[in-house]
Length: 389
Figure 1: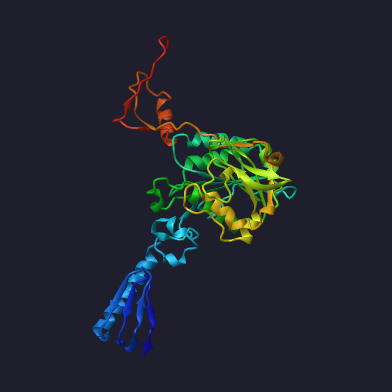
Figure 2: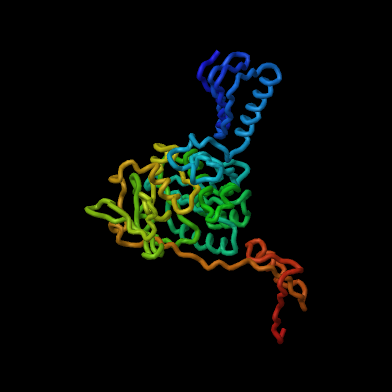
């Protein structure tokens, strides 16, 4: 016999019972509660015995199963603060939703081509999210050539895809940079948003990998379309906690930069503050990896424009820990450049006068690089032959 009690299920459904009710035991003035916020009142004496009791128990069990099999479903009460408004299905942004695939099946999540054993300087773990598009391989080639000039650097490249692109893997091996190659596709629910939070699943996967495999070093998030001054890497290599610095070609001010007074960061010069505590660009800070272990739940939320701020608020407990780099944040060593997006075309193979030419191999390469799709229904193409051969 329970008086004025609550019975709780898994979906927030409240069943109010104002008079004696029996569920094998007696419940008076009780509430039957789940986690879906639905409320059912029972104002008259109700006996839940036999088939009725069994039906009720099955109902609650089915809702419990529904809860456990729906990754986007969670009680709003489990979400910290106001974050329930940020995500479809009111899912906590701290929960790990992504499926991460290692691109080396022989050693899952330990696919380093070359491990760095250099104790003379901290290793920079350079995290790059990337996704399939016509300019992807051009961007990665250019960035890889830059990174190949940086000593003691490990490149963590994470594709926004369900599986790894072998062309990306070939490039990484050809460059000879110590690397980790992963794939972590954005959860389907976020792809439907007006502004999808691109790069979040990639960076979250990289954080997970680092926490499992790395004890010390410096973490930096570098997009594949940015431009980097080699001096940047020496600036951030000795980051003790969190270092910050300007990023060029950002917003209406053409820059996003910390503001420094007496050697301390006191604010931010950014044309889109948007209520963010840390109004910085993703390329404008570096983090000592020991902080990732000190704050194991620090991560990025799935809300476009607020990813950096959410992560930094998780780990910056004292603004005095922020280290101003790039000549007290007066120099620009990284630029948020953007490559013009070239739409992939559908091409019809040309009619060739000569056989066994290079054109067949070239078309296959265009398809591999996602620059073009070769189809008999595509745009006609032709070869212009020299007249004297």
